[in-house]
Amino acid sequence: MAQPKALLLRSPGTNCDLETAYAFEQSGASADRVHLNRLLEKPELLHNYQILALSGGFSYGDDISAGRIVGSLMRHHLMDAVKRFHDDGKLILGVCNGFQILIKTGLLLDDDEQGLPSSTLAWNDCQMFQDRWVNLRTAGEKCVFLKDIDQMYLPVAHAEGRFVARDEATLDRLEAAGQLCLTYTANRAGEDCVSFPDNPNGAQRHVAGVCDTTGRIFGLMPHPERYIDRTHHPRWTRGEGNSPGDGLKVFENAVEFFA
Image 1 (tube, rainbow, N blue to C red):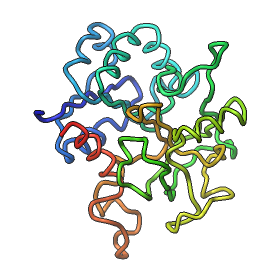
Image 2 (image 1 turned 180 degrees about the horizontal axis):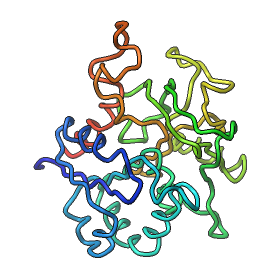
Image 3 (image 1 turned 60 degrees about the vertical axis):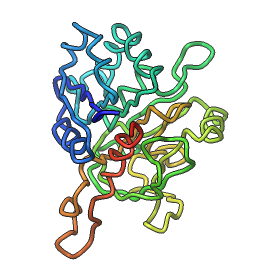
Image 4 (image 1 turned 120 degrees about the vertical axis):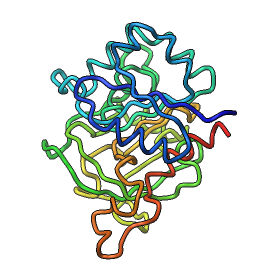
């Protein structure tokens, strides 16, 4: 097909949309930053695109809770359009605040029998905002965005990133389905992390990212758009870092999905 087009949804407080747009453009897509109000006025705009991306930041200041206002607006006014978008075989990515939004819309993970969220993103165990680099490893082959990626080194920057499921049975079900597709590790060797700061928020089963049952909706707390060039690595002047940066492959996979 022709060059894929990505719609980067932004709202007051979004602050990673420019970096995310650049990452998509470097990967071969075109990227348009579209304000939430414009999409609320004209939901059919979404169908001119193949990728919907919800960038990081602090939408509406996280005044109620992280991602709740945008999540509620989408859930009540845009769900039909977004579901059609997904049913058409297209991709949805949520990074950090975008992950929080996807959780609160119910798009990413199904609600339980009572219509209540099966999982959420809660305050970090340390009760503090965390801004640091973390080691990550992937699990399974379900997630489109993680194709051919075994491990990554990416930054996190959040206060509400602790993945918590309703119960152990929910965690078991998600893990068995391959939906717990990205986890924090202790080092590049991929060893299980057991404590802070390797797991910066205390997430259950060290979950850093989750996909839906199709693998075409992906939410993660780390920021792949912040490491797409070797010079983004915090120790690149000491000779460390990869070229391109670990995060670029996430965006390249989205573009290659439509090749």
